[in-house]
Structure formats: C-alpha cells, structure tokens
Image (cartoon, rainbow, N blue to C red):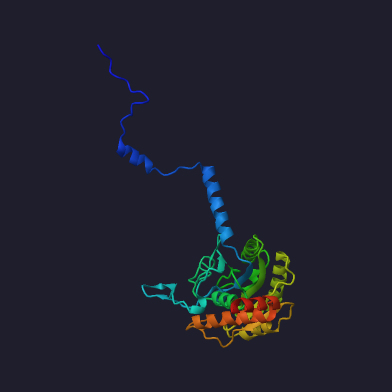
Length: 307
C-alpha cells in the first residue's frame, strides 16, 4: 500500500488568503516600555519643531484671560460661550506659540486661556493682538514668540502671593517656557478689579503688587525682568480710583503702566469688549517696544521687512 505523499520544502503549502488578509491588518503591538519611549521621542521631536525664543507671560484676572466676545449661549441661558468672531489683529500664525496647560508648545489661538481659566468661558484677550504687533514690528525672520497664559478670572492680589497656587503655577510655567534656552522678555499683568471692593484690599494693593514683582524676579532669577501693568478700566466704584492710583504711581525699576481707562466695556461694565482688547494689546506692544526693546532688534526687524 502506497503511503500518502508528504509535503516537502519544495511543495507549497495551501494558503488561506482570507486569513492572510486578516493577519496583515492586525495593529502593531508595542511593549509598554517601548510605547512610552516612542511617545517621549515623538514629543521631543514636536518640541524641537515648535519652540519659542522670546517669552511673554500673560497673567492677572479675567480681562487678561479674555472675555471679549463672550456671550450668553442662545440655547442655554445659564451658559456662556465665545461668539467666535476673530479680529484680523488676533489671527494665528506659525511664529506665535502658546504654552498649554500641560506644558506643551503649540500654535497660539484665541481663546489663549481656555485651558487655564477653566471655570469661565474665555474669548478675546490682549495676548494675540500684542503678539502680532510685536512680531510685525520687532521679530524678524522665523524667530518665534512664546505666550505663557496664566490669568484666572475673579482672583484678588492676595491669591497671587508667593506660596499660593496661582503664583506657584505661574512661576512653574514660566520656568518651563525657557527650558529649551528661550528668554523671558516681559511679564504682562492685568489684575485688580477684585481688590476694589473694600478699603483694606485697595489700601494694601500697592504693597502687595510690589511684593509680587519682587518675588517673581527672585524666583525666576531675573532681577531686572520688565513688567507692564495695566491700570484698571473697571471695578467697584467705591475703591476703583484708589487701586488705579496705586497702579499709576508705582515706582520700580523696569515697571511700566499702561492705562486702560476709557477703553470700551461690555454691557456688564466690567470686561473689555473685543475691540477694546485689540486696542489694549497694541498699547501693550507699544509700551514694550518703546521701553524695553533693544535698538538692535528694531534695526534688524526694519532691515528684514524691507528686504
């Protein structure tokens, strides 16, 4: 009796084509350690591609975080949302980045503080108008501006004292922003509305603000860090002028004050409207360039724009 012929190496085995197709679509499975390394390398590559050289810290309360264009949701009267109207002065561009809440550089876009001031709806603030103006007038070539949003609405100056969560988070984010070798150029500060309600808070404002500036400079190792403070446009009328007086009269090295009084407010008589936020951003840019920009940077910007 003849035995059945056994397959040899030269004899092709039958192939189930449907099974092969199924196997070919299996996802690649990485060991957990390999996956973590892969993600870390990918984040590193993204960081190398998106880094800023000139850093600006945006801090304070709601008018820095931005309430321009924030309206009542027509479908839910208990909810606020941004109307999505974006002025051309606030448009995004590849050379303007922001540090996200999870400390990643990404393309900056309105609302800048959406993942920072999370308790309220954020809209247009002064940050993008400021950055676009500085970029157009100062930063030539592919040099990128980095914005570090830190503002949180409804916060009083005492909540920004050293050791408090808001202060420590601002310092932590500022330090992270220069990890790749960038330079912090300025702290932009718009806060004080929450300190206009009582005589005690208004009376202590100047001392508390001066201490905040001193602490930030010490903790960042930047004793001459430029600071631009916005004098209030609104607040509780009982002590609004007392806080404004403190802001306008403060005398410290490399401290400049920009007065927001007269800028158009929304119907709540507290927050700047979109148009006013655009204007404020340009005023802040003017103050930065005229007081702190080096002549060399101005000259290089002019030559690059004319070439």
